[in-house]
Image (cartoon, rainbow, N blue to C red; front, side, top):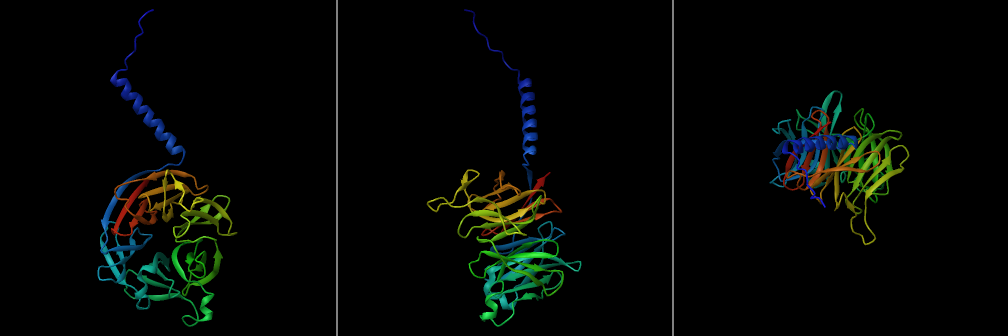
Length: 331
């Protein structure tokens, strides 16, 4: 028998082949809606604990922060991470710091920050050019009265349909949301209680094809899951994660997860902060299918996420280390 020979591939041909493979892999990934991303700016907050995070239409980041002196305040940062404004909590809410949540809103052409205090059953407003808070919504009746028991206790907030915000309602079993009209002050309660059957520690509004307004909520308190609901019907559209028969969290993208902050890029993708595995999970908003994960040394104990349309970035806030990181998405 003749001796078999093996043809050697030249280094140049191998290099060209690898480049072609990478090119087609890149095209394939784009075809399944994966994202490319780059780490943008990253800075340290002037505080010890980030407890809520929002971004203005001008790309400025507003953080609800616990300080070293055991007080709470909003801190307003510009796009370069420079601290430009602070405001202490309203006196009525000073004892409930870690239970408050912020959301940037534009009212009458002016950028303001809404601050919800579920224990006071109120929503407050402050702007960058003032340190004073004003009441935007307040439950009626005396504190602890029967009248107040049927009214919302708003905590985490997100944008809703135009002119509306949605708040996690801590009344009862903590498994409902309330909808407010913010086109005028005081805010008007539109939907006092929309029952979801799950906690809504973090929430995000989405506009889904064929569905319309929808709400993504993460339940980290009890069931370790992410759910998507129709806002019009309250129907559960899909669920990701949950608990197995032994009460242990199910794996998502190969690891047990602890879903926290959630945001949308308005292009059909959801981003979820996985506090349990130090990563950001990228999902299809329509189906809940996992597209990819973002793991990086600056994704450490991620809890709060915001989408900044101006810079096309996910803004990640960490709970303990007090760090803000921008991950720019390349479309």
